[in-house]
Image 1 (cartoon, rainbow, N blue to C red):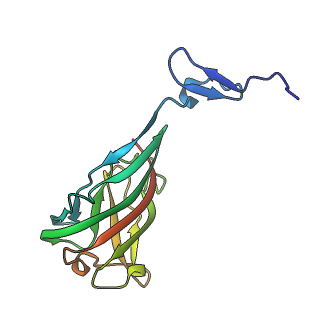
Image 2: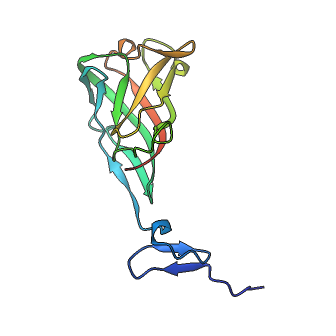
Length: 163
């Protein structure tokens, strides 16, 4: 049975609203998907080189929500330093205050100096264009950079709200 109420509206200004909502601020006005080549670096400098055949991550952006998935292969390093491994994102995360704008998710790191299950996505501070990987160390994050030798596979699945 059809109740006759409005379910979908295409706005002249662009975007789609649902269930009778006419507010432009609530309109779904962006959809994007694709691949990008991230950079991988240490939180204090230096970087890692990615294998040319395994250097892309996939992303989907619906409205302001971005999901990044995939796996990249590291083949070399150039003096990485710091304690966290930073992987670039396709867009900058939103600055929403408190913990609402942090980038979170899951990761796996294969072929590092320590076990796969000891790496975690560090809840990266809002307003940045990277996600950080740390080493699980009790109740904090330990030095992940020292566990990389330049021959790792990084699997990543993160979500965040874009700026």
